[in-house]
Length: 205
Image (spheres, rainbow, N blue to C red):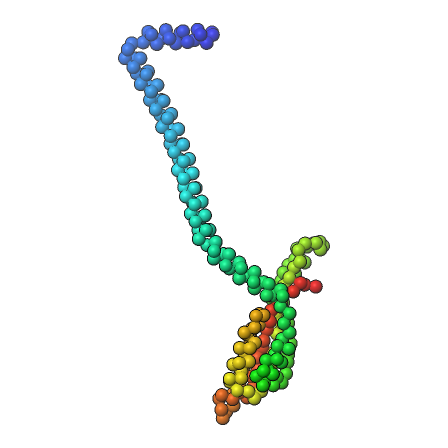
């Protein structure tokens, strides 16, 4: 049966229906169309809602990023400056201590050197290399220290001595300080033992 014959039979069948039956069939068809449109609207509307929520989340994230951009750039600039100080630090602690002692008229009785690696970048790199030697240069943060003993100095001399050490542009820090005072005069110090450290980034050998 051809398509034309099918359409003719369908048309004849519709014509044989009563007006009431035709009205019911028309209503059913209209109801199906309305239902299909409603389902399509629900699906499309849900997708639009998801898109709007996604766009709102992206806009909120971008807003937060823009708000924190200046702070991030300031922090990055500070960290880059600190890294540069560590990489370019060629300070000799013994000379620094002797120079400051000479300025304040203080005598250093003894020196004790210390050195330790604070990070494990080279060890981790070596562990992960698996025999490969290529790649960027790996540097570790190293602490070099000198523990010194000072005798017979005043509290004012010690204060200026410490200020002269930690007021330098290089990374210098007094990490330990033990003070013994004279029994007769608390402003006069019998003995001072302190540890001074400096820090630098060094390529592991």
